[in-house]
Length: 357
Image 1 (cartoon, one colour):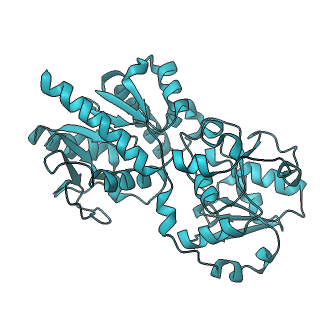
Image 2 (cartoon, rainbow, N blue to C red; image 1 turned 90 degrees about the vertical axis):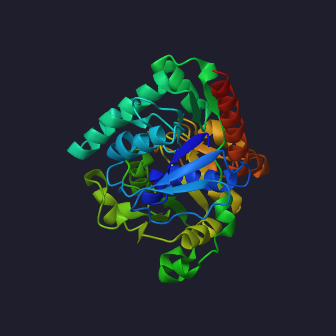
């Protein structure tokens, strides 16, 4: 056995980072030999995948606070089994990072977005882990040239120490569209824009609110926790605008239906290490409108039309008159299959080097 995967992502709700970790592990399982990878799963994992070649080590310890888990139980078990730590989700052991997938350095670049005491604590720990990974990891893996460049710029990490691999979207193939959401909200019978709501400030729902005020005839459907009674103070006005349809929580099937039927999927986020939702939208034939910020132009190129994340003086209907390129090259390039293949190459190279030392 060579590597121990940090299974803390199995305790968290599935968002982009958790999805990446799960999908890549699933594909690695089909590529590796039985004596190559193991995964440590917390006692409170929401589920434990059934792997054929990745050995599952079930911990008797819960992961209720990720820094405690990764700096405690995970590193203890990696030492016990003499395995190289492999962390796929923006966390790593401080004293022995091993191989780390750093999706972004949001906490470093936008520390001001972290306001509450808990958020500030998470921000501090995230920044500490970024720095240790940049300085001490055997190898860093990331999902965009944007994040690679930010790590090099901030931490002076040698470029050869950072490998860029793709993110993916194939999980969306197996999702069956659930059109019940359209029947439940008659306001969506005509044209509407769709966006995913989030508590994270960087997702920039403020842009949607400001634009909607200026364009009362444009309908916006917004899903997610942020509109389930947990709206940040600056976004309270979303609840008062008549052209905003607050959907609350929606299933993956309902998200797919909304993407299939919307006039365009709008993604105004001002900071993303990758940004999976527009890729999902492209996969079902939707037009995408994304912020010209961070990694998004790198990933989506000419398959998207762009907005300024800080400026709502624009008309989306006119923007959509711009021609875009076919989505197929983007969808072929960015897949979990490609990510797993590229990561496997990295793991083999590191194992060979470590074996020779």
